[in-house]
Image 1 (tube, rainbow, N blue to C red):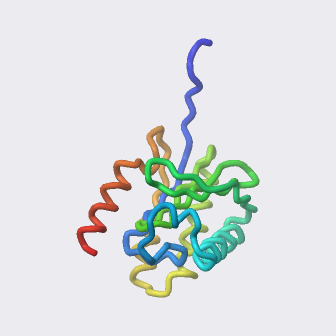
Image 2: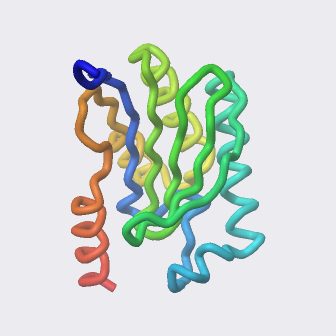
Length: 158
């Protein structure tokens, strides 16, 4: 076994610092309750995802939920390759992974359109659209350390 496969991939990230995405869990909940997220939270998330599917032009398959280092994920697989992780707990985040940069760009554009359609405050929608990042690197899209720092900052302003 000579070496490891080196794989660069592209990813799209969005962190909802203004807490405006419609699926973000608004009530303070312990991680164990997030796993049993209310029907309304789940409906809002899946509505958001259905609109994203339509504008991206590709079906997504829900592949499950997971907790890793205090982050609660819901994952979706793209029919033409790649996957998306969604964290609903504030600050909510979307991270989508692709092999082809062109598909990542198409996804980022679709995500911006979904933001326009679902976030009613125009100023916040503009901030969120400008927060959509497209990258091609080996490092983790949204590290636990970075997410934890944002969560601590959020707690300071509560």
